[in-house]
Length: 287
Image (cartoon, rainbow, N blue to C red):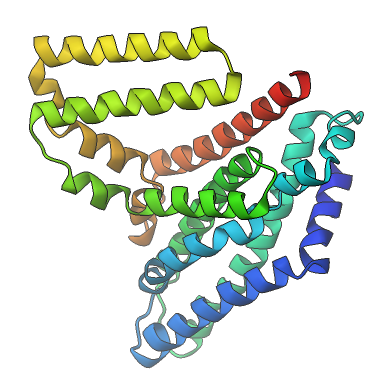
């Protein structure tokens, strides 16, 4: 795993992708830090980081798009995934290289509260809680990007799909608020969600039986609930999308609260999408 990690980390700087990512990230953060914290004298970083969350989401595909898509395009994936190193270790090495690159930018940001503290009493606990949440949110998006990169041979396609997915997760709560709240509309939304889950299951396993079973069982359960207990759908879609939102989980960190449930959520997202990536590659390897 160490060799993969070093190779990947080195590739981000030899190809300038890492430098471009860090430059964009730090220029944006520094600009907002200067305007919000230094000029307007805000004593904590949460306002600055929450203002740039959308921009960071947009630039995440820059570093995740080549993770596995480039291996698929050059056909070096067959050599890599038949090596003595296990697939989970390969994916872990690639992911930790991404996390290190992102962590370099976070380490620079960690100096900003100390700069504020030189000119007054900065709220260090709240500031570093916001930075920790910002790091976890970015780590979750990196895992999502790695999985999407494993689905295609094109870096451009991987970047575009990652961009769309990350924008959707960012706007998830706002989109949910636009959905009609009546029971039938909520039922239809859940039915569409079942279709999406079944389609994802088929794309990963290429098994008609499993994906078909998920579709039939899921649709049957939600149909029964609609006719037997319609109040179950009261605000259901909004609650689910808010719970799943990667960005919403960041709010507690902004307040200086290290929420254990949010911490577990981010770690679960990272684990699940890296697991999905491993399963995707294993399926391709044996197909």
